[in-house]
Image 1 (cartoon, one colour):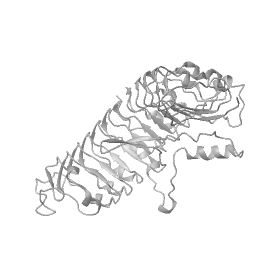
Image 2 (tube, rainbow, N blue to C red; image 1 turned 135 degrees about the vertical axis):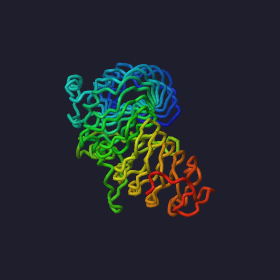
Image 3 (tube, one colour; image 1 turned 90 degrees about the vertical axis):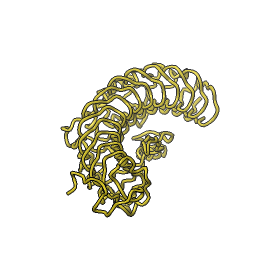
Image 4 (spheres, rainbow, N blue to C red; image 1 turned 180 degrees about the vertical axis):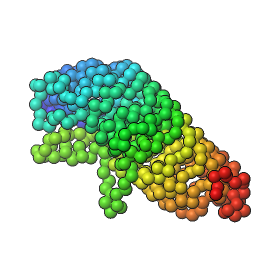
Length: 429
């Protein structure tokens, strides 16, 4: 049969046999009740471009025959119970655009076979001719989070020059900070949360590293040392805020959808149809994971929480003007809260709790008119809590564990704003 697109998603299917559908290009079986192994007869799918089987009850391993899907651009097997090792040959699919294997039970190492050129693929796919294959198509999204993967990040990822989203959170990876990923010109999202990454983050990285990075999460690891000053200086994409009248609700991946529409209309086929996949990411706010089902291009977050960083909070963080979420909690940071954080006009969430911060809360933080979440608890702060604007909305739990603080919303009263009612901080002038 010549059927090209089959969408049976969001049903109650427990099994399906697609043998004989040689010309299928898109199969969407997401959110069903499919059980058993990945036994779909993939060897007959010479034209398959998009395969979605996420949100089912599949078990077993990924058959190596999936590496023969020579036209495959999107492989989404997320949220199943698949296990075993990720086939090494998947990394050789230089034309693969999106690989989503999150929320499974894969173990072992991440394949170290990601390639920059498509010579191998050309040799495999010489019998397939389409008008939207080109040498620039490479991996854009790699999501391996919430598995049981071990070892180090494969250095061959440096060859994926179009990579925008890399999420390996919630695994057992044991490595140092992947500063070498900084050469990737399009990397926007880097999630390393809850692994065993360790050691200090190299502060001598070149100035051109990580120019497009907007979401960085290294929380719940074993990083140590000072906060990396040069790394934060490099985050140029977080520095500029577009004028309010020019802000557009643009999402990561939108340009591919636009190209897909043009392709289907016969105008241009530099991309391929993939209306069904939307990039998402999880961020932590107030201790809870929140999934952003689509990623706004203007969304910018830094989460360095639950590590072993020490030393001061850097003044340079106040230059990241488009930052919406900053979490440095559960470290050993000391010194004063820099007043430059009051320049983060877009900031909505600030968590500096469970550190060793001293001195007063800067009055400049009252300038943060979008701030809806503030947690300064369990530090060594003293003095009068600033008043007005967003600070009038915060409750006691924003400040508990700081015996030297006084003023609303705490019951401890200050004698006056200059007299904190506690021994003066050595940083007070």
